[in-house]
Length: 229
Image (cartoon, rainbow, N blue to C red; front, side, top):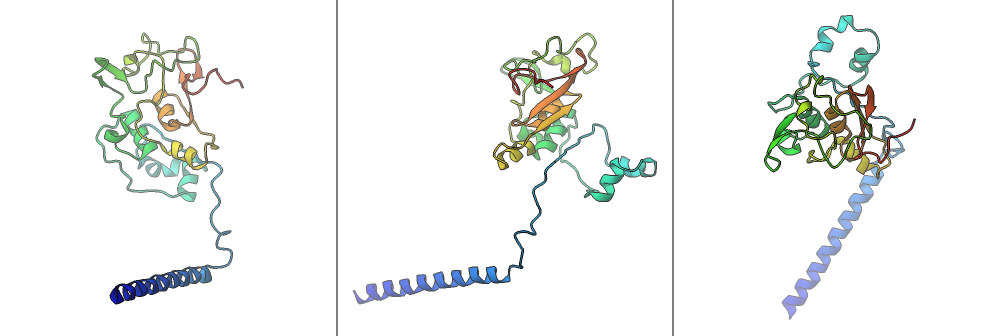
């Protein structure tokens, strides 16, 4: 009984000692924090713009720097942060693979966009990366014209519907929406449907250019009706 009582008493002393040490550490941190520390933190950005340009090698803006006008790339190089040795460690450099990798930060084997087209075993045919028969285009006569379309991968689509359903992980846009509790206004706009859809992620709105109708279009994944204005 003596040993048990003594052990309990010592344990309580140790708990009390640890609590006092923790409080001392907290008070020390508060004491050394500079005045106005909270107010000196950077404000959240009001606008985040991600621009992805197909076929633009990383060395081109510097190779032709003397020919560039003021603003544009010169502004970004002078005022921004430039990564001189940035690479993505994947072999297939097709459009949707690169866009999805940039949008998610994941490898193709993880985000699911392994190529512009691939063999779907369940459908027993080659499918286009973002085709989805559950979400049709909202514009009439805006589907790919297979007679005039020069992109052979878009001709493989079995439906005019488009969505990010095949994108298996969240994108930067999705995480931004989660961080702001859905208050962020997120849009992906591109000539190519696959670029707009991957950049918009699951939470944003995507618009792409239809060469058949000559206008920007979207699908029922994003809206019930075509937005006005």
